[in-house]
Image (cartoon, rainbow, N blue to C red; front, side, top):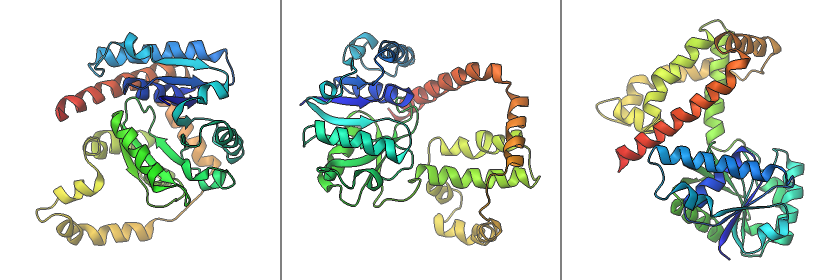
Length: 309
């Protein structure tokens, strides 16, 4: 057993293929639609070239790409896999069906991980014969550029599987974190969701425009959050550290929290957000802007690597 099997050749699956191949592992990329596989491998090759152009690879792109093969035969893809990363659509029913197949076909010692952004592993692995080897390994997209991986075990996931998965992620250059228990949305999307909910409230209440709201993060909070987390941020923002900071600003945050209330996403709000974004970025310019975003991420990753070396 020596290779990693990637289930699903979409954007996330391709990103994981880069991560593991770059980390030295042979990768078998599986998809039920055989016709998408040649294009997927071509896109992986292009990503590797972009990374190499920014000094983000230790080997030639061709050498890494040679480790990636494709298959539309699930049993073949799983044969000999030490680790399996699933990337199928975000519904419990689909994941339950896929994991049933994975559990039946993969060797008992193979780890089965899901890339789901918020569906707990317990909701689709409970009845499996080897459920103790299943967990969530949630990446931040694209995983080839953003290293964080959330590891969320089900109540029955073995500690050994969690430890092996964390060690594997460390080995291939990712930054794994472990959640001690399942929670809806995990950590990344709970934090992102909290910010989005407050952002939507400020916009809906007429406090700030959509464009200026984005600047609060892109030109303000995000500048620090690129290289340090919110707890370290407040620790360094007062002479006496965290206790001093909360002594100075804790009452303000308490008042803000009391003023915050859950609210749905009304059609009026969605129309407002969509209209504002289309004024800033017309639909026919979205592809170019997404390409710009990806180039920017490559540059940031290169800068971060240089600063940490």
